[in-house]
Length: 417
Image 1: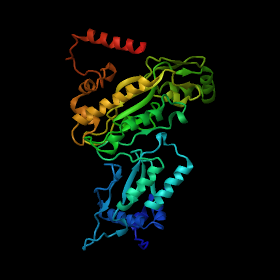
Image 2: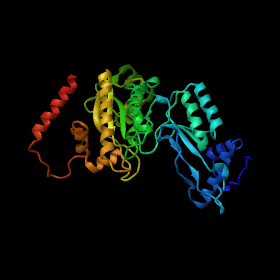
Image 3: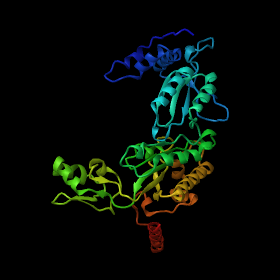
Image 4: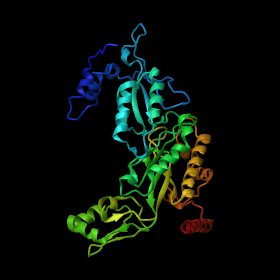
């Protein structure tokens, strides 16, 4: 097929600003890839008509029910022929990346060479899905591309109403704030739910994300149905000599304004001799003081994870942050990791059986109530899960002492373990 080009005056305007434009990259790619030239032509028409012209369909590989995002053009001439024949198909293949997004340079070269051969050459590393996004191929190339990529050790990711591709931060491989083995957790969850990823059978999408600390570089709390966040249970470690060096370098007023007063729970104070005092019982592990005074402060030694469920972007009821359902789970041995997997399995199973079509976990919890959800998945209710203090006086208190004793007993058992 001849490498035809199309006039794109509206897209050209996107190159006129001070910032780099995706249009420039597509034009450069279109010089060797007719498919991209067709995509530019169709995109120009979409900008003119203010309407998208891609439709879905059915494209897949043997044994898999997901992982391919089909795109067929709807933009056709009066005789039914595609207006931009080079882009009559533009399917995207999703592949699972390595945990923590670690690649060798040879692997990256292999990916690029393979996609130049089978597709448009356009690659996205990585979207919010977490996948390696190989964008732009035809149906007759999908199976061959998958077979070759599979030989490199890669597998298709999730798409549709299924468990989606998980994500984990670089974590302990490079970050001093890491409180858990992010890559191990990531691979354990994905390996266990691989069938639910490849063969969509859920009411809607379900996402796992793992971040090694509360900085949450993976946006797990607000973007995943099941977030695993590294944290610690004992006191923050403090190097007072480094605290004093920080104050001497930055100034006492700077330290007060940017560290002490910005603690959300007021747990920090600075003594007259520039020693940092921390009320660890009030600390909410937000990571701010550790981020600012990296040499002086570090997470405690009793490390593990917190589990949150229900985070998502806008759908039926708007954006939701995940709700903490397990405040702290140590990951010291095989049994602890099995417990994490058990909780994940309970949540996915309950979601599969009780969610409405096109409903995320967070929306399901809003509909049935958090207490009912916790009871169903076998987790204890904790007073810290209260969303807001009571706003009316009509609250039953007749069993308060009994419930308080139960909670204190659980805290003692948890501390003993």
